[in-house]
Image 1: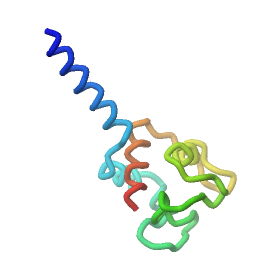
Image 2: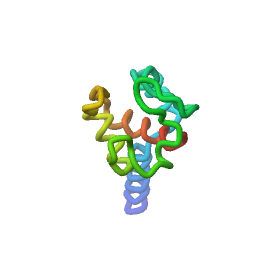
Image 3: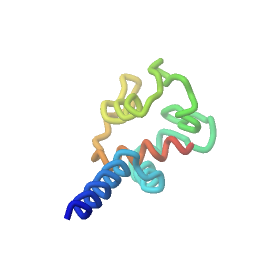
Length: 105
């Protein structure tokens, strides 16, 4: 019985960890299904209405001077910016997947 409980706990924790980390393939679907793709390029350095996201997690700072971290990227997605980026309401799973995708660029 203890072994079964241990296995259930390990599987549950690994599932939660995977959800927190996100799925890049699903994140690409989120990116393409939201206004993100209309305003941000991902395969060139060309800016559209918003800056290119190519290599975004390889940069030190965002255009607004904020250090680029998972949390700062999530915050700007959720809250938008005064430079014209609208706030985007996403479920946590979609947000985690989107960040996982952005990390692959």
